[in-house]
Length: 399
Image (cartoon, rainbow, N blue to C red):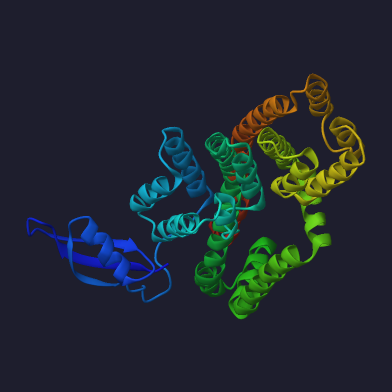
């Protein structure tokens, strides 16, 4: 649905202007007249020169959207009115366009689930299934509130993991960049000075000079190889299930980081299954939806196997035991939850425990990495500096 910009005057002759989505300009004029505004200019809002304006819609935006809709619906505000109010307060044009599109579909007679399913990038299968279950049970506002909490917790968990991995990756990248600058621009200056000495250079210094000569001669080839390797890695990860499985399996085996990823996958599995099951989605269907939400191919395949076992009559705890991936404590808590008829409540407790474990592990990892990173920088950058000054120290000793 296009957005129109309009200008007009109210009953007092005061000039007014604004924006309004509508099917055509005549509908905008009619709506303005109903509000006591005399339209003077109504035209389609021009599109920006370079694609759609605004930031992309993030999962955090969807969490805020869910929370706002749930709050307004609990307050008795109709869904269409809620969406209209939210769209009017959006600063991001893309999010505003998304909300207006959903509102238009609901006004046309679609259910909220049908309206959301037209935007699979922003609202995944899990989200749509939960909304569908909430609409069927007549508790949509409660489900949306639960989904908002779920989204907030998952995004917080993702943020913790990214924080743990981003810091060392950034430091390594900076160290490589500084080393390249030293080899290309600084070492050649020292090399000219050393040649004027006419003395034999230490082996370590010769090695650094050889690396500098290689970088200066073939920097373009190394850059192309790095880009090609990055592109090939991304393509292989996205297109080859075997490579993705191998990569995720290796990540889980890494010291310290692997345990963080294990705990994060268990937390996602537990919280997602708890939210889905609590919303009234049948267990087998819930497991099918949960598989893709674990964030790891190894766990995704394990959940699919659990789903197959549950579909033929196994209890969830027995099926989890067979995949040999979940800790004994998780399996026992699931078993207690099944026996007590409170599986969702027990899974929420498991999720909270492992989310806290991830938080503690990330804090510990940050403390552990700081001295290791300092040692790494000292060895790489400091080693090159020492290598360049060795001949000077040798000459001073000879004098």
